Image 1 (cartoon, rainbow, N blue to C red):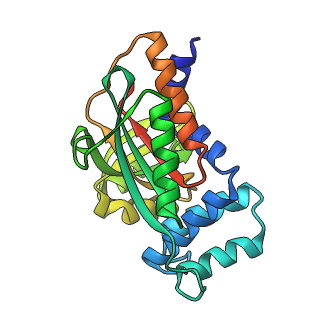
Image 2: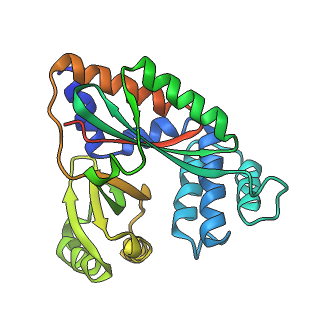
Length: 241
């Protein structure tokens, strides 16, 4: 299997990407902080915080580091307000589009690092709004292992009642898509069904995929891997087929 097609297959279900990302405690701490800042520091009432904390624990992130990240997010830490969200849009080789989301405490560093990698990867920074129109913003919940076979229809109906628009089964698990406003309700429905979500995110999903030749596909996937390795980069989305 080629590297290009392997990358494409993995991107259909982000479990492997999340596992790679979890190796960085810096990324995990920032995700926890931002989740706590947005919806509060109680994981029982904040599904995104709950999932971020679970991911951190699976990555063996120290308990005190997790707690400090929550404290920063709730405004009790001295650097609580220093982390901000940044979004960059770019065009990569083959006419493929990228959306790069960052969580950073240094805007200039993030901009320089992202621009450097884009230039190195033969990509160009795009004006705001010139790429996002190619994507739909959705809430996405992923359940490793999938829905239980003996209750599959029952759980699906509960998810649809909560706002699920699309439910897709993969070898790795089940992906549930919904309107951003319904993300918390769908995640709660997953928990009510006795299941554990591997990720609960707002994501940019491509409306159409761009086919490339093998060489171009490898260039784009290498660029995405390089961007994803930056501590300031939290997510990279692409319309690469």
